[in-house]
Image 1 (cartoon, rainbow, N blue to C red):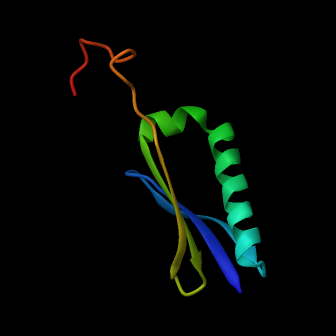
Image 2 (tube, helix red, strand yellow):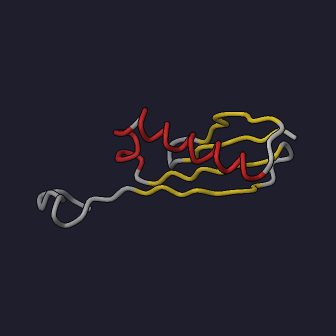
Length: 84
């Protein structure tokens, strides 16, 4: 079976990586490692996009797993002059 890890943000949807012939535990591990690498490699982008949805699908497009990542400033770090 072939699986895909897709990253969706407000600005993009793309098939990111393809994984072949793994069981469900290995697929979840691969997904978690991929997300960790994505955050390490693109630390600024998560703050710009604010919301990431990572979907793991099978070759038919059926969504098997979802991870959601969100980034937000708090009142302690927000610029009081900035508009919402």
